[in-house]
Length: 215
Image (cartoon, rainbow, N blue to C red; front, side, top):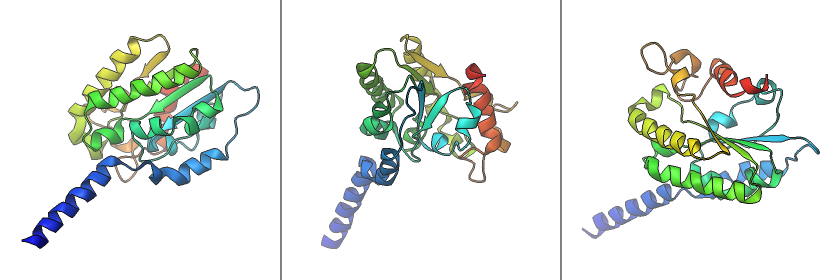
């Protein structure tokens, strides 16, 4: 009986630690960012967020009219970005910021409303340093491996859009609809073999959506 109680208690502790999302799991990424420097005199644009940004290897070529810096760290949540906002965004003094977060949050069963509240904290902190910074939120993307969470993604994206529409410095970027096929499901050939991360075709689609204003 005591053994059973101990096992149950240990399971609760492990679960709490996982849900607590120790930000130090990203120490290696954050150390890498500390070695980056922003080009002097450039109108810098920061792209940050989870793996969809982290793996955008041709970002500088795709958004060639922007002076971009990629500080994406794969597996991150909106709360992780808030925790590391100084290291990933603020210390570079960007003119604009593009953010992709919320995807992993939804998959981890976080409520869309809670994710949005963290996004608001990020916005408040960024604009407190420079009220003229433009902040672009890339909505959560659809993917075959997480299609079961579709309804939650749609709720989050709707909340995020309404929030962006209410603020002159915020801009909502819709990648959800362009990534769906004629059957309104994620287009399979724009994803890698894990059906979660995008391949080059997926990023070319993002290029047309996100970087078109720079062409």
